View (cartoon, rainbow, N blue to C red):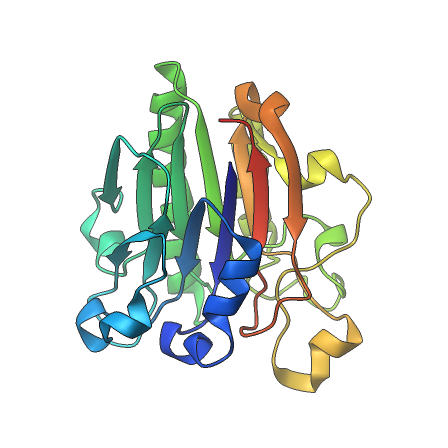
Length: 254
């Protein structure tokens, strides 16, 4: 099974930049999109449909903001949205897919760059998701969390760590939450497979950053330790254009 995550930074925008052609080439079995910034009723069937896939959207209440979507062509047990907390769920950040072998969360984690209040909101979101994952692990369930985490975990995960040490996305209090997930039975699949590889999944549109290789790794697969032997590869597809993020795919048995 191939799972692909991609922050498209606006579904309508990426649709004009070869989105469907890119998906056809990647050919994921499950596609998790973040920052769709649109509701289904704003799009035509031609815009929203991808041949061979069913889809499920969870837009934010606020127009033109946030939102996640799911495209899939494999059997699912159930698909649900949100964490059950209104302040998070109003922003359209979570789609949960229960599959026969594991539960997949496709998530657009909050961005903390609008001030301390949003940093606190982001940390609370991390905490609530981990609480729910702890319960699932306690009941013997395996979990995959993917999406835009809006945090670079370690210095290897961004081009200029010292310059960004006081910037949301690389604050110590944000990074420690990735540590907590790893302490609670999760593994960063890409870093486990490629401990020394420097590769990024997001680049600011400013200063020609992508062409200059000045990026951050913000898009992750955290998988339950029990699933790790089934992970065959994690591929950061940084050659795929259309957004300030690139797609990241995980190949897993199951």
